[in-house]
Structures are given as structure tokens and as C-alpha cells.
Image 1: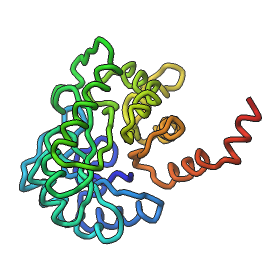
Image 2: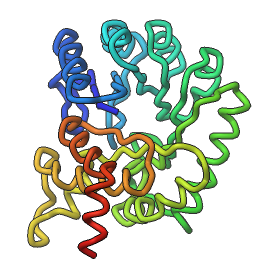
Image 3: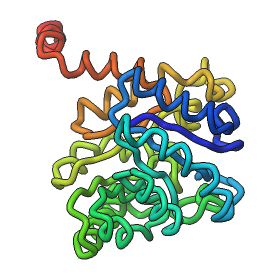
Image 4: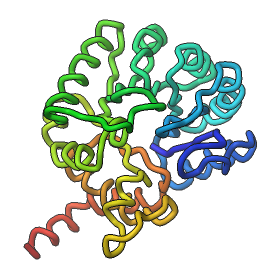
Length: 263
């Protein structure tokens, strides 16, 4: 899944694809690089992001969805039912539900749905998030969200543990470590770790300042490879070409046999 943020303020690519034609061109680049899905978003969900009103979000995303929908599977990344409904009308077939309210919209349109765990809102989710057992709590939340989606008529459901959404570095690592457990629950898992700040903290050189987003490619690829090897069905990434190359390596029986021989 290639990320296409039609926003001025997303944490990594905010402003790069805010112009409509530039966004459409970038979407086609993602397809050429090997994206199976292009995830179009018009409102940043990063910690502390400023909310966007409905009319502005629609203005940002609908022309891009309409232009790309005939060329690749398009998902709409939104928290607003009206935006999801309109994007599905323009040809999107998957709803990336960052707010937990969109199962009825997806069910009514016979669209796929990604249910994601988020503790709090964009404004406050990183203000000292706490859990007794982050893996158990996220797994329980996702199971309930899947049940609600099924009740709403959704037949294609993906679960996203929400790496970075109301979680500390330790929470994120615990969820990644437990990914085989989440996969074993039976629903296909989507993992979005691309360029996120916790990777910059982990990859800080010599314990120094966290790496900025533009220097987190290697860490993003390492996390994506772990997710794929652990059974994730979808990895949501900014760097499609590099991740596709990694995916081919993970999926190549010859390379996996060679790796086992070296152990």
C-alpha cells in the first residue's frame, strides 16, 4: 500500500503532493513502483495535527481518487463518513478507517475496511499513553472492531494495530514482536510503520538525537521486512520501490533457504 498524502502537514511528505496534478502524478509513480493499493488521505492523522473541515478534505481527495481509481485499487484514508462515502462513489474500494466510525459506510458500499486501534485523538494520543498489557488490549479492541464490521455487512476486513497511534516506543516494539500472535487471530493484518518517529529514536546514532523522517528509510525497510516475514498481509509505506524489492526477497524461497543454511 503506497501512501499518498494530499496534505500540507503530514509528518514526512506534507506539502509535496498538495497540488492536485502533482498528487495524481505521484499516485501513478507509486503504481509504477509496484504499489497494489494507493491510500489517499486529505487530513493528517499525525500527533498534534490540525483538523480539516469536510469541504476542504473532499476538495483535496476526490479528484485524486477519481483519477487513480481506474488504474489501481484506491483506499481512502479518513475519519469522516461523508468523505469515505464520496470517495467510494468516485471509485475507491477500500476504507482506511482511522477513527473507528466507518464500518456502516463500507458495509453499505460493499467495500473493504481497515480497522485500526488508536488511543485518543490526534490532538492527545501521544500524551503519556498507558496500557496494562498493550498487546492484549489492542487484540481485544481489534476483535471487537472486526465483529462490528461484520455486523455492518463488511466482508473484507483488515486489522491494523495502530503503530504510533497512542503508543510509546516500547508499546510499538511490543506490538511488532507480537505480530505473529495478531496474524494467528485470523484476520489479515496491515502494518504501517513507514518513516515513523519511533524508528528515528531506535536508529539514533550512538544514542544521539533521533533521526529525522528523511533519514529513516533503512529502519522503515527493516520494520517492513519483519512485518512481512511475520505474516502481515499489507505494509503501508512511503517508499514503494524499495519495499517491493524487500518483499521479493522475503517471498523468494531460494533466498529464505540460503538464509536458513547460514544459521
